[in-house]
Length: 217
Image (cartoon, rainbow, N blue to C red; front, side, top):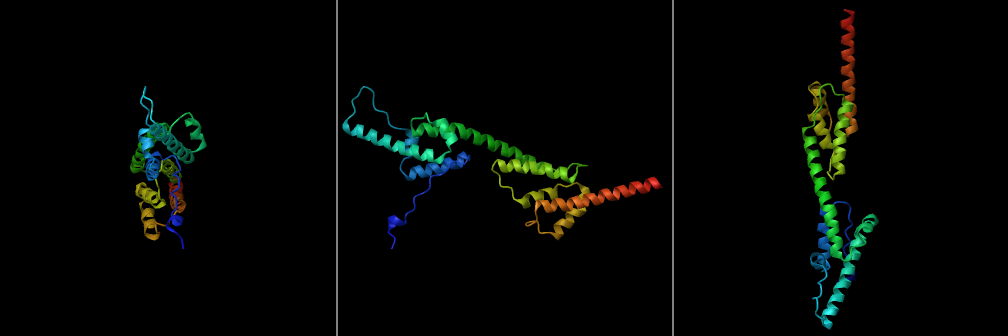
């Protein structure tokens, strides 16, 4: 029978994946659970200048330095080698944490602002008069791919519904037909593009026939 200690699973060290705000929150909770967060907030307490420390104070300071080394080890395990190389000169866990926050919190704020701009661009996106189906799909997918790169989850059905809502009037009939005859939750973007291209080619064929008929008359 498993004892309480043997069944306890140690929490994994949170890996930094570029999303600083989320990583910092999870890492903070991890260090709090280890009772090491105070070293990040306050650093190693400095000894008073000009005062000979007592034996108890020396021991406490050595204990704090040992704990700080453990926190540094956790941080080194959490981040990639390329990042570690930029912080090797940091002597304490607090210095490493502060350096990470300075570098990546600002970067996270920038990515958040860029994502907001992309969301607005996606919201007002619409097919232009005379624009080809392939051209409109290319514009739409360029924006959605940028949104994904900034951490946005873009489900296929959301993109499909957006495209169908924003086609020009000449596609109204085929849009209604697609919505009535297909399950949009399972339809793929490629399938939608194929259906719209077929309709576009038919319209182009009819236009050419009318033009030829007009010339013959």
